[in-house]
Picture 1 (spheres, helix red, strand yellow):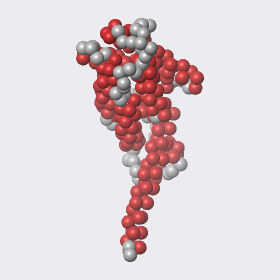
Picture 2 (picture 1 turned 90 degrees about the vertical axis):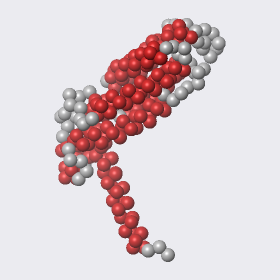
Picture 3 (picture 1 turned 120 degrees about the vertical axis):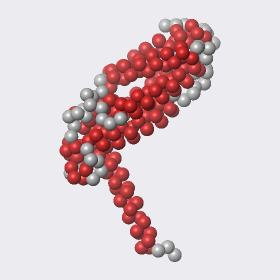
Picture 4 (picture 1 turned 180 degrees about the horizontal axis):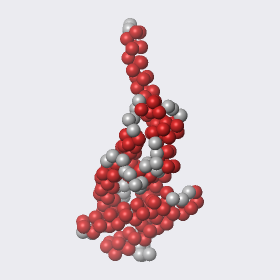
Amino acid sequence: MPDTADSQGKEQPRRRQARGERRIAQLLQAAANVFCSTGYTAASTNAIAREAGVSPGTLYQFFPNKEAIAIELSDRLVHEMRETYGEALAPVDPGTPLEEAVGAAVDRFIAFNTEHPVLFALMHGPDIPGRIAEEHDALHSTLAGRIEGLLAVFLPDAPPADVTRTAHVCLGIYKAGLELVLAHEGAEREAYVRELKNVLVRYLDPLVCDGLGRTDPTGLPRTAT
């Protein structure tokens, strides 16, 4: 028969750990709200504590300053972003229409960034805390590599240097478009997303056609737009 006292003794640390994780999540969400509304530079630990509905003393039990909060927040988001981008840029069937492949990837990217606008806010302020910039640059380097892999399906005969260059141009177009997308809401945001997809497809379509003479699913030659 299990020792009741021993079981209770083990359960208490687990409960305290669970409460601590919930509190950290609460503080990170509050910080995200504050960073988005005021920017990282103007944010304060008092404002974050107030947003979270806790005392500054409670906040300091978990984080020594706002930089530590921003770093923890960005670390978690970058990890999640890697998974999202990896899924969005998974290998596709060679018969997949270009428009479909581009649209699916852009939708996943935009969904993540609109759900977590704080990462964009942290990256585009006058002060970038900790090593967030380096981590973000490393992420985008990985992202460019994944885009190359995706493009290789559509440009199998293109020289590697051309595929690399095309991938970086696509990434640059996306980053510029993302700023416009996040600056708008509702129907206007959706319109900017459509424009971003159109720009990418119109850039890639002539390269695909000129390089391969690909055909669309109907079996007709693709034409550049």
